[in-house]
Amino acid sequence: MKLHELTIEEAHRRLKQKEISSFELTRAVLDRINAVEDSVDAFLTVSENTALEQARAADEKIARGHCESLAGIPLAVKDVICTRGVETTCASKILENFIPPYSATVIQKLQRRGAVILGKTNMDEFAMGSSTENSGFKNTRNPWDLARVPGGSSGGSAAAVAADMCLGALGSDTGGSIRQPASYCSTVGLKPTYGRVSRFGLVAFASSLDQIGPLSKNVTDCAVMLNAVAGYDPADSTSVPEDMHDYTAGLQKGLKGVRVGIPMEYSATEGMDPEVAAAVDNAVKVIEDMGAEKIEVSLPHTEYAVAAYYVIAPSEASSNLARYDGVKYGVREADQNELIQMYRRTRSRGFGPEVQRRIIIGTYCLSAGYYDAYYGKASQVRTLIMQDFRKAFETCDVVACPVAPTPAFKIGEKVDDPLTMYLSDIFTLSANLAGIPGMSVPCGFSKQGLPIGLQLLGKHFNEEMLLKVAYNFEQTTDFHKKKPGL
Amino acid sequence: MKITKEEVLYVARLARLDLDADSIDKFAGQIDEILGYIEKLNQVDTEGIKPTSHAISLTNAFRDDEPRQHLDRERVLANAPESEEGSFVVPKVVG
Image (cartoon, rainbow over all chains, first blue to last red; front, top):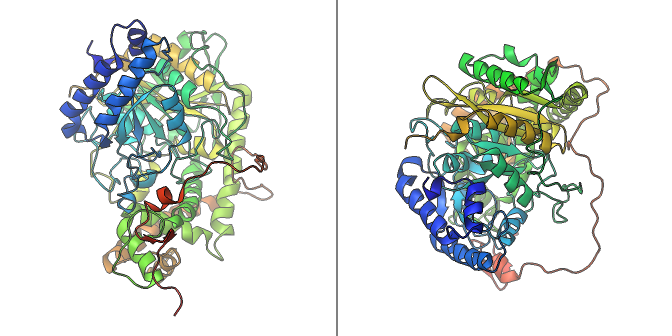
């Protein structure tokens, strides 16, 4: 096996045994990036020199006997997470020249553990989108079919993991932005419970929904990465002081007695691809064969999740993105010497169309006379969606369903039809509204060879259950071992 | 029709956006369609249901009121489009 193809788990074993050095490993992954980046376009910034310096430092640490699970492991980071001294653009022209003066908590945690940061991955501008086509800089292509999108908004991270351009990556998920690209690219992806991972240094899109999480080549790596980034952070006032776990500890426990809930409403979803439905059904059978019990559950308000989400997320975004005013950071349209004109020109030239659309929708939903009808109503529906899950989890331990109704679509196919694009988020949005953890695991391929993901949803702070079910499933299947033919 | 072109322009002004003629035509139709879809929420009976603004409710995350290290001024101003004498420079606000 080539070095860049290693999982975190295997690379860690070899680093610890001194069979390889982090420098060799990092060099091999950088060579891989150089070889396939022209086809995939997963990265916005590759920090080759600092990555190699970090690798050398990791090697010194390892030589002294400190080989923590991520020491010397080359990882990629979505460009929405602040990295001190390295451009962080959110794939937006308005932040084209922004170099953060500090690092996000998750980055500090990775670096303390000796991880090597390779660079920053492409995404939909400010994480708004489901295809990475809303990047202000370039399209990322799906390694399984270069004519198709990698999903989004963490499309660069998913494509980089799938194409072995890193051993694992961080993404962020506001409405499915880790899980959907993970499913489109056949990687594992986990959105932790809201509050589980610090958002300090994550550029805000919708603060009550955003959460950072890992994308990885297998479930064990996902647990290792979650171990590294999870935990209470006093710098994030929404970080939850819950006990930390070793997420790798329970993976091998069996599935006997685990109750898997199948939402009865989901099979009737419009636009559901029969191949996706069949792959998910089959995955549930595999899980049942391992001793789990299948139970029908009802999530009646899922139908309204898209509508509620596309009020709440744009409302929060319109407020969060008010900070881009051409004064404190980013780009300013300098030809204006009147303040309001300067704001307007800067923002209109700096933000792409999807971001402007959402700012307008959000501003409208929050404006005088409309607040109760839109934001107020959506927040009440959010309560009902949460209650649905609470009720479902009285009878089941984990909910299993598709991640997205179809496999990856073609680049350009939906770009002028935002509502159709929004509707494809139907299965992922409700987890963010409810704050529960959700995960995507490779569970098959379409006849055309496009990846399909199984989504697992769990109770608040029960990532262990998702990881255990996913791990057991992975042990009896080999979808995760397949590689795209780049 | 949920929203007119004039309303889109008005809201864009509130949001400090400056739409050109092409964008207004395109946006007004798309936003109207999205708001039309959002009307779906009215099918749900929410009488007496409390709104949720955060899924995990925490009240008051306090910390000790002690001075801590903070970013130094130069590093913060380094990202400003224009700065002078330790301050951000903006276009003239008052006449």
